[in-house]
Image (cartoon, rainbow, N blue to C red):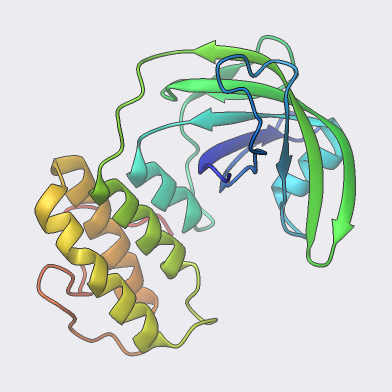
Length: 216
């Protein structure tokens, strides 16, 4: 199973990096007692996450329900501002203050598999910081739209527009204010980065929104 979260790592000099990633857990992973259990991270080369994991051999899985933060970190630009973090307790690193739960981990082994690397990791410490809000369909729609946005230049523009438009009913039916703001932010970013912006289905028009400005 793959679970979306935000992975925080730091360089040997203490420079923070936070990136959305999907760690892979096997079917027998014990979610109630994760300490000592293993999972797999597959960062691309080159990436700051991979470089940090290869040098410091540690990081944090930050589980959050803030889909706007997912979108902003996935589509970040050179002036990205990291979410507020604080020092970890067991590893040398930083965890997100607003995350619901944080799992500190160590990297046990790494191996290359094409453009990705496989990092075998073990959970060494768990911090529960607040209750995790249950995900609704609008949250999933924002995450899927964000993933589509990262495929600009890889998939045809019209395919991206069509698939994002297909997610709009989930926003209309189930979104609250935070999810609508995140949806607008992603659509703003997509409108600015697609080569030929065009209107899509109602509720998913890819035109700039004034509600949130994307970080470039």
